[in-house]
Amino acid sequence: MDKKKILVVDNNKLIVRLITGFLEREGHEVESAEDAFSALDLLKKFTPQIIYVDLIMPRIGGDALCRIFRTIPQVANCFIVIVSAAAAEQQIDFLAIGADACIAKGPFAEMSHHIQATIAESEASAGALNLNRQIRGANHLYPRQITKELLSANKHLQVILESISQGVIEIIDNRVSYANPAALSILQTSLEKIIGCYLDEILESATWEQLASIIDRGFEQLSFKTENGLLRINGRHIIPQCLVSEENSSNRIVLLTDITERKQMESVIEATNLNDNLGYIFSGIRHEIGNPVNSLKMALTVLNKNIDNYDRTTIAEFVDRSLQEVFRIEYLLKALRNFSLFESPDLKSFRIDQFMDNFTSLVQDDMKSRNINLRTIFGQGVEWIYTDGRALHHVLLNLLTNAADAVAEKEDPRIIISITCSPPWVKIKVDDNGIGISDSEKKHLFKPFFTSKAKGTGLGLVIVKKMLMKINGSITIQSDTNFGTTVTVSLPENE
Image (cartoon, rainbow, N blue to C red; front, side):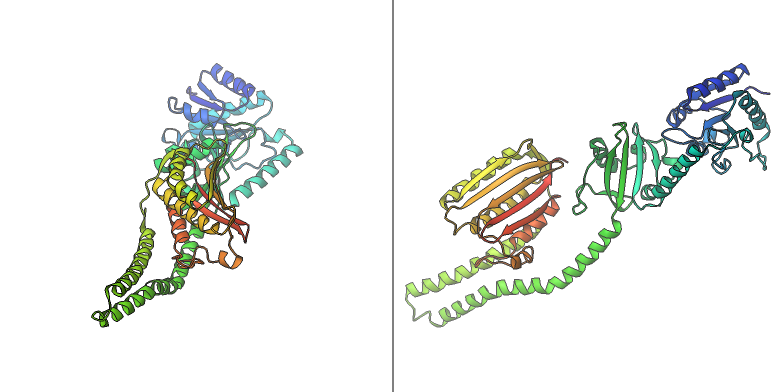
């Protein structure tokens, strides 16, 4: 019998010592690995002719490892033998998982006999069509009920994991040890290609950088109502989450939720709503511009007919009236222009405290002239924010203007701007003790041209919401009539 290069993969140190000792006494060159990761690393410098692999191991089981071996060119045709401690409890179809033989763990005297037989069989098996499907040594073992129950429970959990629509990836020491079918579909890969690999070897660099930060942080509760944390993987919209193992803080479970269909449905609904609202929007524009144009036309017509009869004072009144209507149109056009403001946001990290100091210094005098008490409060741990400073300035200026109008009739008008950190968000709240918003008005807050102000355009909050979407932020409004309003803007703490 020729001497062989043999690899033994088993996490049981006693079994490894017995098998390697026996094989070395027989004159074979033997290497051993305690798990799948070690085995895959070892194959980079050692090419075995025969592999003995335990079926049940931590991290990656022997069945998955056999399939991986068959995809590696240098060991694709290697003779693989499963060594199973649960051979009597499990009906193992070892040929289906890529193995050539299976030995039941039992008395080593008998095991050594079967090991010798498989070595001899490895020399004659090349091209053989009818391999021995019998598990060697299983006839002298008796099924253990507790092991059968554990295997059944494990199989039940595996069926659940492999049937759910959410992608599940287990990462141990930064390497993939498990991926369910949903995860394989999202990543467009196979189990054999991903198991034992580092994720950064599989994903595009931009996707990996975004996902790596989530994996490093561990558990991250992401809101399914926002686009923050949304990944694009192979044309799919994916929300990632990460769970940390309680037993080992270096182990991670990555959950990938595919919301592509939901996003497509939202796009359809958005397009439908846009079509429904176009008439309303154009009607609003026609109304907002039509009224001052008609007033302007009437004033200039009267002035034109009586230009020779009116004195300079009367003519000046008509000109002034006409200019007021022009200013009104100009104000509306400026508001409409803001729809396209910051279409390409310049996102960067900056100190939020410095930004707020500059912002409040610009508006403080106006607040004092209106007898409004303006305060800014910073919560603990608030330092950095990742956004477009120009857009944030415009948003806060709009919200502060609304708050100032709301407290105009109050005896003790107050506005408080508070900034708190709730990773990964920085929350900026604008509180006022003004007249509040009625329930009927709340339904139309973000509707173009809806306003309760005599000289308002109804575009302020619409523009604010659009800008916040562009800079990965969101806005919520809570209000009680006669008690005041709280507007909360949420923006990313970091990139």
